[in-house]
Image (tube, rainbow, N blue to C red; front, top):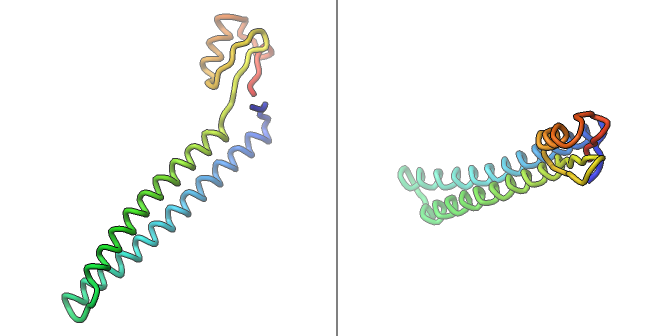
Length: 126
């Protein structure tokens, strides 16, 4: 873990925003594929009802499979983005006076108040 300065915090925020945008674009791509599959399936149904159609059942099966595939991949992308964001925002708080460390600032502040004088010069965040 590293000590995060103002520039590094901005970099982490930028990385988080980039991850959000990439996840959104990948999700939109899968949604587009599913939408196109359903579009073709619906066109085939309309042709069946109102005119010629040679492959309604396969088009519907295709649309269902593509939709399921898109949902699964969207879930995988969302989980990967969440994991990446959590790694980017990982901050470890350490006490200069003892071996206490925590990832949560509030627990560290409680430690500082109980164990040591609650002074900002006696702890740092990594």
